Length: 596
Ligand code: B12
Ligand code: SF4
Image (cartoon, rainbow, N blue to C red; front, side, top):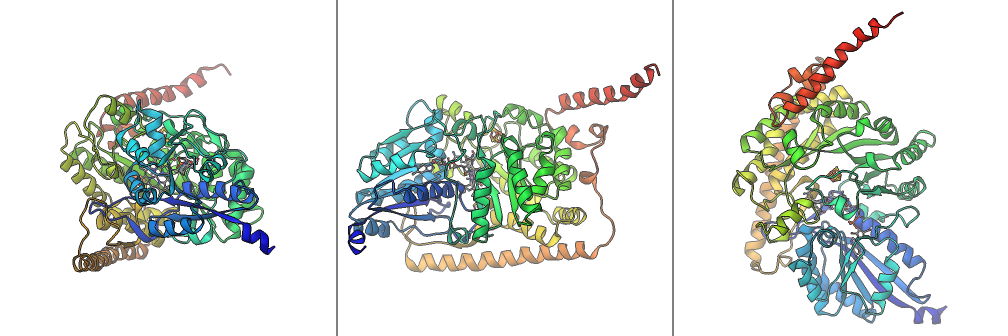
């Protein structure tokens, strides 16, 4: 026994999900971040399987460390020490690296490479660029020149070979599996240990039940990276994920599929979850992402509710048909929005809708008008705004790249809250200005009150709703980041500043940091007390409540609602509705004309 231990070698595998820099060059990091990264869970699940199978040899222990930089400080010097102590055997995997995180990933890799440590970077930036661009863009080439290995494509079924190559110091500069997307049935499932899950706000973990989406949106990277065909996990695999988490006390899940309604296996998965909940009494809550036609998938919403889906993210994107058409998002029909949102409320789910600003026809005034229409006519609870961004991997980006149109060269800014390319009519400052104002416009005291009143009618706890509204409003306003990138208590380290930006003196840095903490908390307290007052009013009021957004869809509503008269490009939609309504009006006459 002693002899075998003495002989055992250790191979370190560090799996790190990098964050990115704020506008002052400090890493965006929190005491508790918002949602655990599924990419980290996917890689950890695959690595655990490799460790259990001892893929590097019977006498080699694969020691896995998993960190998310949005809640954990990364110290390259410590990694170097640990790998050196293991005789130099190790690999640092920078995982799920999005475009905005690519510069930070390379900055983490730089000292590691200088110390001769092997580094491999995967995720949407590498995959998106390799999938769509005719050549390797400069930032990827720079990484390759630093000796960083780039991985394009999905690593299911491939991690073993990668680890073996790393154990022989023979990583390739670029792996390209973009044309060979793996099946997901039966592969080791995503998993994160409890201590990692606990570093996020709620005890919630995430997993993907499938990948791929059939639609064609031009701003989307997903279809060009994960494909348009649904590849899904089996109901057995999903049950395995859920049970493994229930065992560690995690009952809340974020299913990261961009569009769960288009997962070919949704019904088998929901049936399994329904059985666990209804027959075994398991406590499972799910947040899912769906499309605006999800109510047309027979049985989907009803079963989702029974399977535990109590919050849905919906890619509403815009209410102007011309913008939707321009972005090839023809599947989004404004005439279906109200029916779809109401169906989710009836199933007991709270609705989050994503709204993109910066389509060619948008102006500050039109955006302001659209937000007003949404507030009055669509039963959305939380609205989140994004700036239309040519994300590498998307058709939009490819077109601009090939046409050599000027785009923001700093990848750190591709976080959908910065302006990265010119808008036809708005200046960068105008677009950024209306983006920032959009949050205040939507989360106005009057509208917060309306959403709380609706929540009360729909049976959603208004206190809980108030906190969600407050957080979605406070994070962009106080922290200047998107709520999905937010967290609890901002951490900043003086030395973790972006290379090229000056290292601040201790006095200046800590003085400002303390002032920021105090002032942000005071402003938060001010917002909190305003939200509390609104909540108090809503709770005290016992009168019944009803408004346009909550009113059931009416046949003739295209004649009265502003979503049909005030938006761009809605004439053809109204025409279609008019024809449909006329045809319906004729039906009884035809029926009664039949003999007998
Ligand atoms: C869940 C999710 C989140 C979660 C968690 C992030 C995560 N990665 O899990 C949250 C809510 C935090 C989030 C936030 C944001 N997100 Co997000 N998110 C997603 C989503 C829907 C799923 C991610 C996922 O789990 N995919 C499945 C995994 C398994 O795929 P994968 O990451 O590509 O990993 C595979 C391969 O790339 C490879 N691989 C990955 N890493 C490595 C490393 C090594 C060493 C190797 C060998 C292989 C390898 O193997 C993996 C397994 O097959 C994706 C869309 C999508 N379909 O992926 C968007 C997506 C990744 N997000 C995106 C964006 C823009 C953001 C935000 C900036 C938006 C915002 N302002 O809110 C923020 C950034 C904040 C942050 N800190 O991450 C974009 C990125 C596009 C791009 N070119 O950069 C995507 C693609 C969506 C889109 N709009 O196009 N997101
Ligand atoms: S519906 Fe969503 S995931 Fe599908 S192509 Fe459009 S943006 Fe991409």
